Image (tube, rainbow, N blue to C red; front, side, top):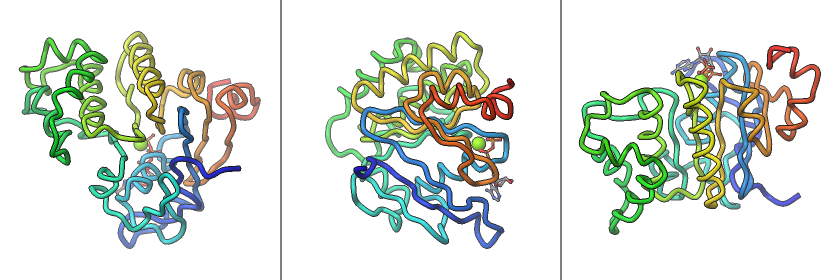
Length: 237
Ligand SMILES: Nc1ncnc2c1ncn2[C@@H]1O[C@H](COP(=O)(O)OP(=O)(O)OP(=O)(O)O)[C@@H](O)[C@H]1O
Ligand SMILES: [Mg+2]
């Protein structure tokens, strides 16, 4: 099998000098794919995403992007290398306007980013209407659009999203998933954590179930949805 576009392989490590949270965890995403990570609260999903983004010192394992070992790079260097990351919490600047948030997203760029901003506004038209409003005044779903839009401003080659639909209604969740599919079809592979496991696996090319920092199940979204054990333990039957 050829090398995946982005892979965190055999990742073991935790926070500071604390106990290991990840135990040989592997996550990857191929070009053109949506890969979804599900699992119980505290399983280490966010920790694994942070590890891939370079916010954790791994004791073992490596992270590779497009065939290059990036394990030693800082998060900022990984952004320059083409990674976009939307963390689970604190993913927007609430006191800044929507447009200022997008401008902040473009911090590494030295070229003209107006076109990219227009693309973000085309993807999320409500953000164009609210461009001069403080991001903290937006609804939950709109804030998540700001967060995803901010990450897109660097023109990432791969996008990592930690619970992009947290706290939104089912209708807004469906809309966000549609936009995420649109982003992936535009050529940006997506690695995302989702609490709405069933719905997320439906749009996933590949799914991971993480339990206690390890890979418990891996398969196509379809296979995981059909797996009796995965259904019983993680999808509510
Ligand atoms: N900054 C931190 N410092 C120390 N321990 C942490 C830190 N963040 C998370 N942990 C611990 O790591 C473990 C995994 O947490 P993590 O946030 O990765 O889980 P998760 O699968 O993302 O959960 P959730 O579904 O609630 O988002 C937990 O035991 C948590 O207490
Ligand atoms: Mg989490």
